[in-house]
Length: 286
Image 1 (tube, helix red, strand yellow):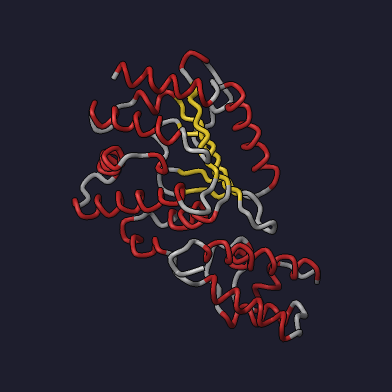
Image 2: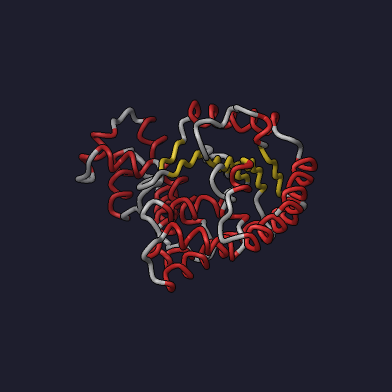
């Protein structure tokens, strides 16, 4: 993978999971591992989750602690550490991004399946440029026009993954509220609805609308995203965005609960074809 691809985030996660397995196989605590590299237990935890970059010296010391003496095995893992530190294409936008978001962009770009429930907005991967600009401008009050445009450019760059050669599958449930809430005015919303209709016809996009008429449903906890990866070693990750931070959940029991909620939402929603008809109806009303 080139530096322009999201592989660095996945490599961090792969290396972290391998280091965790090696540590557990030797019965070494995170605290002891941290002590060996002059770091805290929480630093080891972040390394094993792939949330931080890796220093070559730290990886070398941990491999020695874990009894990995085979030169070929050490070289392979150290090479992985080097590749994991390559900055992704989104790095140049870091000045206009909240600190937690670059990790998400990398995970999203590496995913083979993206499952989403959205309430407030059309999801970023399906936003038109005009809709994105309206949403970003409201979310970045007081920001310069240049910063707004760079954030919009990042969002449009993210969308390229949906039409790439190895495009992920996107399964998305949009609450009707996201479609009724006008961002940018009537013409912008008309364009957004038309774009959703067109994108919903792509073979890798499954779009369903949860209508107001259904009443209460299983998505009462709010918006979330579940990311799945082609690498067998990587667990699914649930992404929850908050006002000043984000949560990344990868414990199997947590992921299973969110997956079950999304499955219930999909079962309760009109089908993709019926949802497309609902979108056409909203377009005629707009």
